[in-house]
Image 1 (cartoon, rainbow, N blue to C red):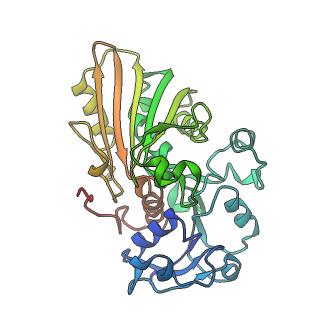
Image 2: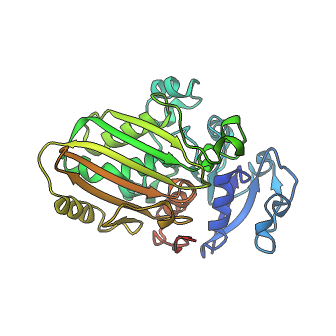
Length: 343
């Protein structure tokens, strides 16, 4: 029997990407989709690419409160997800793609998101769903907070070094560039075509909300407090994140030793690929892969790590399905094996 799944907030970029991937998942039935702004409209009227594939109408989220589902994907804006969870009385397992339950400390949430948390008692109960480090928790998880796209790329770049305590706790410099879909489907002045096209810019320097999430994730590995200088940039492309990380090692390490360390650490993680040359966005486009190139610069005595992910797949909807697979006992890769779209 297939899992009955509902996508709450299915009209945004991550919601649409969930529908694209779930449609071909052999163990999932898309039982309902919701949207406050598109309520009552046919999915194909908004997204014609689903013609003859998914023929459903957007419901109001209130309509599904009393329906039975196995899993709910919350593709809602920050703030709206915790409102939904507070109201929801059903028994479905939930995978939340918003930031509402990623941070474990309500005071940190208030500081970075400028709002009181509606369910602070739930923050410590939720599994933080960076799949590569929470696999043992997922089979029993009822609520999973899917990581942000930048934290996914950043943490995967650093985990082997953090695990072995090879680098200094500060400074860690993370220089990250994202495609425009990372800003969400709601248009703004900064994401207008004339601003983004033929342009490249930094934003939210020193204040980006993913900073505490990255630091929290690194600390969860070995208990040490890491300080990151996180600098995000907006690329004039639709999708993808390229991250370059700079860290100071506690000892000299060769590039060969570094790559072997990474290959060993990720030896059982299908979606993390250690590569021998710096990767590009198209190496992983439209897939759940993360390609990582670690190296050591003897002149500066710094470790450099370049990683790429698709922000809508491994950085959001693909990782959500990866987590769902492990929650329900399926092979981790089920429904997620695609070849990158490189042309």
